[in-house]
Image (tube, rainbow, N blue to C red; front, side, top):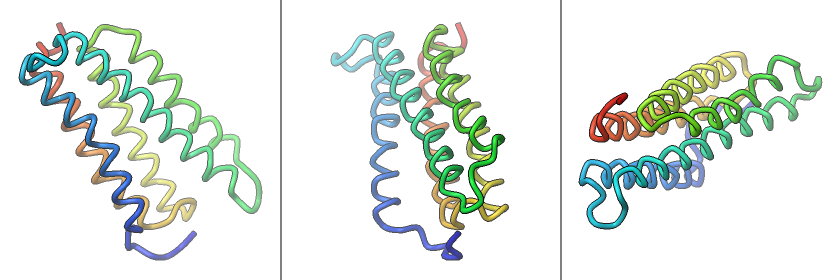
Length: 152
């Protein structure tokens, strides 16, 4: 993989844009829907968006696994499909546990992403990007969890 630690501007811009719905929905939950959405609807939309993005991030790992010159490793392929399965389950449970589960899954996938960077399976800049974006996403999910009534 590339040795550059500099995050490509397009990746940074598009990654940051992907955080906007997390932040906006968390803010709506804090503001009790602000007359735009019922709080329960906002929590459902947030969980749905979180599930979509977590699945997308698993897909990024699938891409890294299949791009290997020596062929994909079974471990990497297996790990790449787990986020989508976990995201689906997190969407099906009640709001509080679902937001907590998504937070844990984003953090776990970030740690795996950092591991792949350390092994040279992903570019150095990818780890830096993932830490910043993951912390923003998990922060928004946790704000929504607390503002939305916690695990109840």
